[in-house]
Image (cartoon, rainbow, N blue to C red; front, side, top):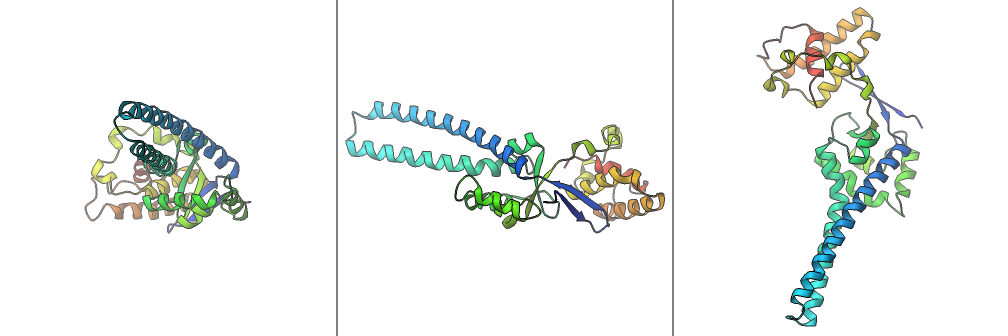
Length: 256
């Protein structure tokens, strides 16, 4: 299976991603399951202790039928809580950590849309609700089989939601971004105009600029900065007339 995924932008810049394979996703899922088991065990013990204390306190005051109803209600609440923990866990962390759960974060992988953009709540809901089918007949066997049969290692949930899991390339962030002086940073009102895709595009250019011929480098910088300047509207920031690569560096330094 090819572990690379290429995405061509309108600026003809190829954004390359390395697809997270079955192995890394299995380890990430195992970490998440272990965390969920610890949480569920803690909740179970808390509910058990609370139920015992409650029944002991009111047991002599109510009939046997009322006690049975109380036990049934407690079990129903526990089942609901377990459902929230199992499915809400993934949705919560994927929204808070931009496509990552604790397991994915530990393995350095992230969920994106097939267009290379951050996932939305809808994407997360769909891919995690379909997790029920991926789990069949047990232990994600169906999901693993589907991942092995397609070139992007997508399980059924990913196919339904239009998402893909990729490896992060932390080592490829240009060192110049870390050294960008704070006074050169974009003003908050200007920074808000740029999307995560804009930031990724600017960073990809800066990563690859040394590989480009001078003429091609200037051409691409002009085309990409033209798109970024359009985000700022007719007025733009005070530095709207700054050199193309300077604007790209300031956009690439944004956190998205």
